[in-house]
Image 1 (cartoon, rainbow, N blue to C red):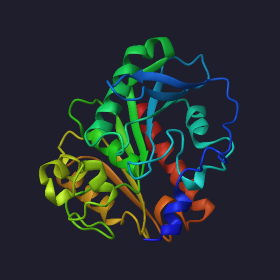
Image 2: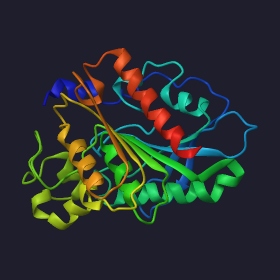
Image 3: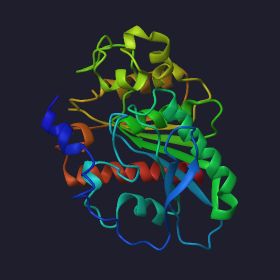
Length: 285
């Protein structure tokens, strides 16, 4: 794993990050939940053009090793897009909610998953005012956000139409690539509050591969074949487990792509996004 790549894919520091483009149908910094003793939880909401009835929802979950990241950041290779990826999803007729969740320096798992459930509850409650139909929700995440999106979609208490997961961890119980479940220093250990091998029940609870069930919604898993941070075997294992359960899944791998689509061509990244958006639209028609 390259430390230079880790720095490269991290969201830009606020001092130098590009300012968001003005958009008349974006609500930013909307509080959606309160946690005693913690900061308010907020989300940004991108709304499609009015006049077509309640819009289906994409709940986007950002990455950042569960420890950092910005809620409106879809990753390294989309930061220069104009219009940006979230605006593109809204232009396709979705409402897009980008939700904060508590990071591993604030609370351990399952806190971030609880926060995302709270975001969905709030969106369902306020959906009629906003013109959002949460009965047609697709969860979409990248890296650590893809891991949380997968867990959310597999939660029997959550009624998701489907999930899109980009280069996400799926198994926190066994060694894969640079991940050592006996180390207390990994992002996974910081998420769980201890080395995964020391808290095996919690590690299994936090592993999408162990949460699969026959009524799981459709999944689209996309992963770079040369990923040095989260090996492609994570998505391969989750796809295999979903197929074993007779749950619908599509797995697409991207040649030459490292984590965050680093090394992939612009055309390949555009294809990933287009494929993901087409998949999401097909779930909510």
